[in-house]
Length: 297
Image (cartoon, rainbow, N blue to C red; front, side):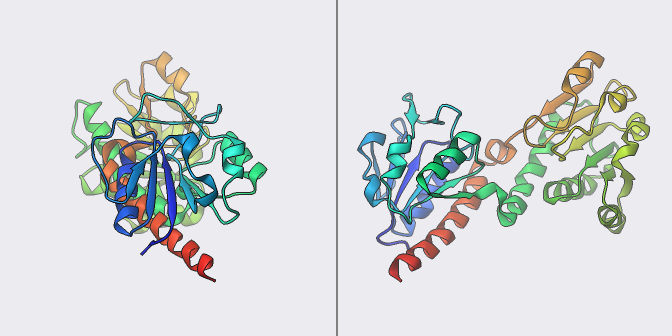
């Protein structure tokens, strides 16, 4: 239980609702900021204006997955008002207060450093990334169906990168009957592809492989789908780039060549916000239990 802990949830999207639900179920006192238009109510949660938050009593602040914008503003889906978390506000929180975010843009990192607050980047955690790879893979399937006029079954799909997301995506498309090729650089990743029954190839060989591909799904956050590779692709080839912004595709050249390319960011929150929110809620709740124990010591 989180009885006695005080947590402020600032803005965000539908994923935040699952976090609020979890925290209130565990008996934390939750302040909702930026939820003016939210009709749903949660026992143990109260709506509050940002400037009226009891910052000096907060044990944690939960920000949206995207953290803060460069201006310090917080994304709000359930409110027309702008929220801006300032250095003075954060400095008023107790020393043990932690800030949860998905990622940490420069503005947020700087703010945490200036105020000496611990910043927990949830999307950097292996457990969150592995759980999130499931809705990400399903989202990639959804996009492949929406943006092609052929079946996944029987098509040739290249998955670039054998990390947590790449492995789940490759396995999912393979289970749907696609001929999956796995592009990677490290020898152990190529070996794993063979063990999974996939066809491995070196990333450097993508221009040679490109002509045979119907769908390319990239998970590598560096330029790997180059103009050289795009020039060899068939007109119907679809590129789905799952890597963090700006992706790993030469989007300008793809557009010039008439190759459909999509930078698909934040798929878990788009295709399965409830599940994505439950993933984050479980991790946050576990971490807050640790904070509660430290306070007791």
